[in-house]
Length: 253
DNA sequence: CGTATTTGACCGGCGC
DNA sequence: GCGCCGGTCAAATACG
Image 1: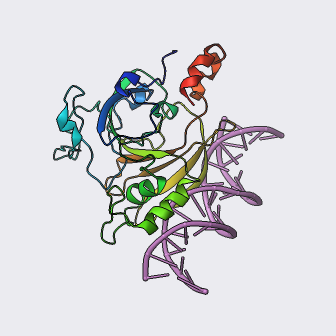
Image 2: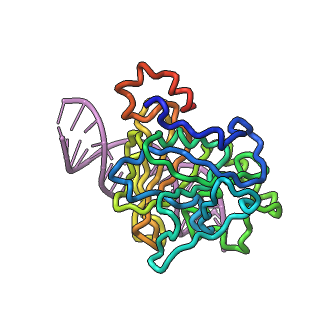
């Protein structure tokens, strides 16, 4: 499976560009969610407090400029194709470094901003993981009105924090098989949630990728998975035949 | 017995 | 400065 985990770069033309444009870009990626998760397709966005972004056919043009609220039916499930995956992700995240490739092709939505790393961990952490934060006046980092103090704090944290993103998945299983091996190193009960948050580290030597997993308080059927950092290796279940496919590793910088 | 998980302690950031 | 909270550590425990 030489093509595993390779992002369809034709849809991410400025993949190498570190300066984000302020556009919303559609793309596809192949993930290796295994067969038993095929009915647990991730479809969330990186910020659970913001509207879930609706998938837009990649052929459509200008209407892509605005995130649209996702249509949900009365069962609070997606009314669109369940095979759609919607993820707002930081521009410099290589999706394939967190997901290996596989038979399932999911649609993702990449939100690109005018400055690098605007999806700072702080923003994701406060907005996505901790719904109590950011309530004083609703100051939003994504707008130019951000205070200098706040920006300073964020910058300070950016120094040490890896890029991260998270998404929601409808799943009975907490830990989705993303092809990598993880070791649990902590569990925490987060305030105002009934479900604990679990912390995992990639077991690969020198790979510092972390992920955390928790259930959405509002809907325990949803698993929120947050990845931080980039894998420096291919998914572990490729290891057996990875000797002959070192070129594949270049996709997992 | 080696490895993975659990879980209370600890630490640092942040708000008040 | 203090307390709260999230994230991490590491000893204890479980597991294969």
